[in-house]
Image 1 (cartoon, rainbow, N blue to C red):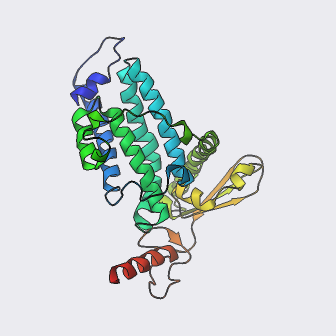
Image 2 (cartoon, rainbow, N blue to C red):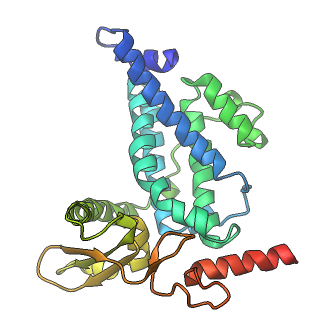
Image 3 (tube, helix red, strand yellow):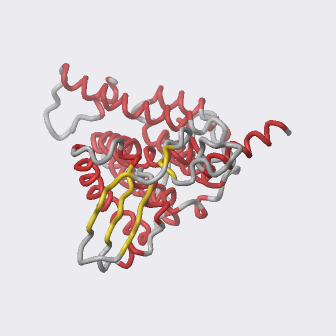
Length: 299
């Protein structure tokens, strides 16, 4: 925490060290450390090569890897200019906003509900492994001990015996898809708009938890949105269902309870809960996953 606090000072201005500064540094350290804990926990059964190649990942995963390359470029520039406070700000912001509040939250359904070795889960894990390997090397000059513990715990010693002997990350421009970045930038803006309507619906009692909602978006003349995958949008908004329809200019959002019954395994409200007589309480996807796991266990 002391090292993080020292690195957060702008060396071009007077530095003030006090209880408030140390508390901010402790909060930032806790956020970064908890991000590493989440990544490590969800990579416990993953080994490099067991997932798709980075260029073949799901669009959401490729988008976050593209954002990661931008982070690497900014941090390298800040290190080279000895502006360590920019590094601490960029890394903390990436962990708190890009990962914890957005990407990792969206991924939980795939990580926890899909088949352990299914393509969707492996795609997420491949992206998480790349993020972990890159992020731990970015913070290693500042959080020397935490970075080394993460490196050893993640089994990254295959790349180098210590994080401090590993090559410092460079941005991989082949992973930066400008069209993909622009597409998801629009979806992030739409997500904020959708969440405002979800909160209004929740406060008025029209819905309970946001995950139980169906969101209908009248896309107006937005052809890009009308062609989006509604399953992707449902996971991106963390709701049970998304419907797209033409409409007037501008986005019109309607939030209502999703039809169906809540699946006790994935917590999504589905109309196909009970469609499998052998698993009457589960939705179709969860029934298929559990059935496959039971067959695998019995064999």
